[in-house]
Amino acid sequence: MPEKPSESQTLKPAAVAGMPRAQDLGRMAMAKIAALAIEPTPQIYELWFRYFQGDPEIKAAIDAHAGVLDETACYKFYKRFLSETARGDAIRTISDHIQQAISDLAHTIDSVKSMTSDYGGSLNGVSEKIRNAATLEDLGEAVSAIVEDTRMMLEKNQSLEFELTNSSTQVAELKKNLDNVRKEALTDGLTGLSNRKAFDKQIRDWIDDADAGGGKLCLVMIDIDHFKSFNDTYGHQVGDQVLRLVARTLVDGIKGGDFAARFGGEEFAIILPNTPLSGAERVADSLRRAVENKEVVNKSNNKSLGRITFSGGIAEYVQGESIASLIDRADAALYAAKHSGRNRIKSAGP
Image (cartoon, rainbow, N blue to C red):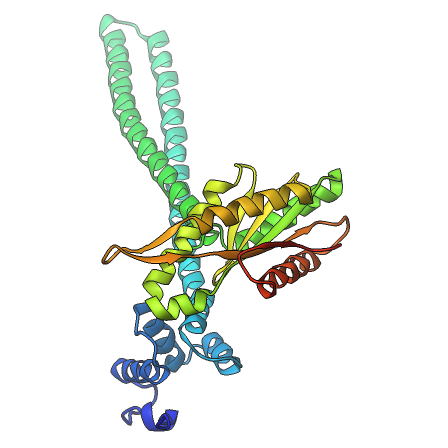
């Protein structure tokens, strides 16, 4: 196999003063992607563009990476630094808009207070004129003043009511957008399941509940069998289809009170609250059989690609145990299932 050109041979930009131009950074990014022999998707391109641009966090993480810089590793870096950054920017933008909407509301309310105060002062003045009226003309002028002030009050009130309605609608829409962004921050973009961040929060909350109430809780770790070879054979798009198929099967096969998440890569996690080990074994094996019975079809040509399976490991929470220990025991059971033939479920000892 011919030796790959070194980075200095393939990535040398045109000589420019100071920071390389965008064209040079783009060429460097594309050359690096070609050298790694991975598909130049927009996400991968953005990652390497930001790397050569000198993003300190991205550069430090990639430079310290000890493993192979393949497509999976690059996507992990993208999700870690860039997708989270985008969500953070969205949250900050919405937060700024909410602050502005609240300021507008406060201004409108102040206007209502000022208008009410002015109207009250006007009524006091007219009342004084009525008391001191000596002729019908004086009384008529006082009544006309009341009519005119009331008309102006109604006009201003309608305008302020419109402003308040608009502001309330704007705040409601911004709140909805913020809720969506928060939800996206806890959701895996590919499968629609909860992501690792959501998993970490959920298991922490439920373990606290189990400690407080002495309830049962089981963790099931799942890994798709031979996923890498399947992915390499049929491509990442079909691999993504498999991940979504497994995710849907998990969601369809658990109760509403249970929790499924994409733990990372082709690994999934299910938390079963108020469930003893025997119950978790039945649930996990039912899910295993459901996945085994699914046929993978290439959507581009409707050709059958066969069936997939997964292996699973279960651990029942022990009072006072750390989350890391619970995950380690479930992982150990998962690897035992892999080593004993795959497409099976194993349970961990305490």
